[in-house]
Image (tube, rainbow over all chains, first blue to last red; front, side):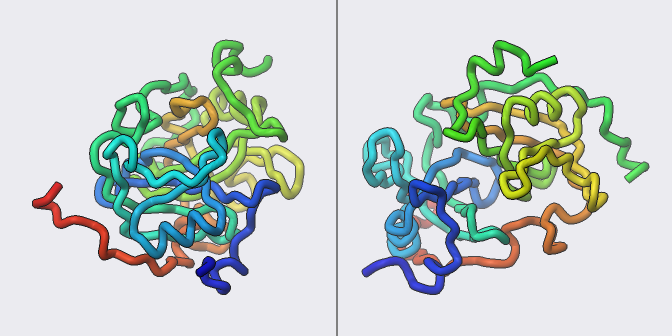
Length: 123
Length: 123
């Protein structure tokens, strides 16, 4: 059974048929990782409750946690206003990142100028 | 002045020279939107403290809030483990979405099976 036709009609895919999926821990709000879904990966995610992606490097479906044990149980999926990005809110078991970090964004902070931000009272 | 060479060396861009940027409200954790940056947009973001993107539809740089007033003051930028995704943590003024919603993910929740998720006690 394919992806629900009404959802498929709203999806805007890139040239490879993929949509980026932002993965967030549902309660803490941590952004865990970015992955990619095609229609079938989204269908499997919605109908199994297990986050399932398309691996661009391995060119195969990938159920998060099947190898590592670091499963993502899906709590909510939202499509954005343009239909070209998914937000997947999950219960992450263990580390989301293959490096062992909790998130894929823990290791490499870039230096950013802070001068332009107003004080809270000015907002 | 171009993007810092050490950062540029770590960036993995798509065929259009772009990297997806997940934009998150720094204190509440809300995922606000997804946008795209090339080297120059990232350089401007890091050196001005104002979130600056490449508009794929208009093919031009876009300083968030210049038209709408819904400015994003950048608090933190992180590059992910693969160097192919940015996480931009901002102070969002007003609505992040052009529809007037606070985030681009507010309007379109997809139905998802919940049966697979364990109870907290089982984790």
